[in-house]
Figure 1 (tube, rainbow, N blue to C red):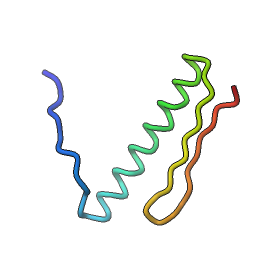
Figure 2 (cartoon, one colour):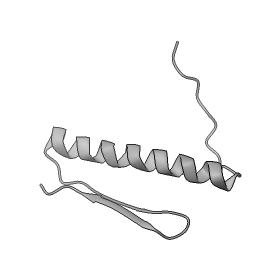
Figure 3 (tube, rainbow, N blue to C red):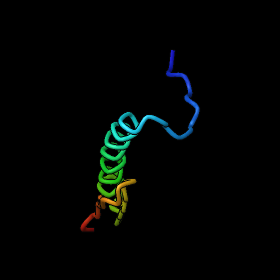
Length: 61
């Protein structure tokens, strides 16, 4: 049995929202790195948190 789908909506609890952001950010950056390696592609990701902090990834080709 697979995982059930969750409804995509804003997380009201600020603490839970921050935890989810951190986990998903890490996963997204990992997937971007994998894509760059597997497909020999140049990939760039720019993420701003709700506090305005910048997170980025870029492959070096």
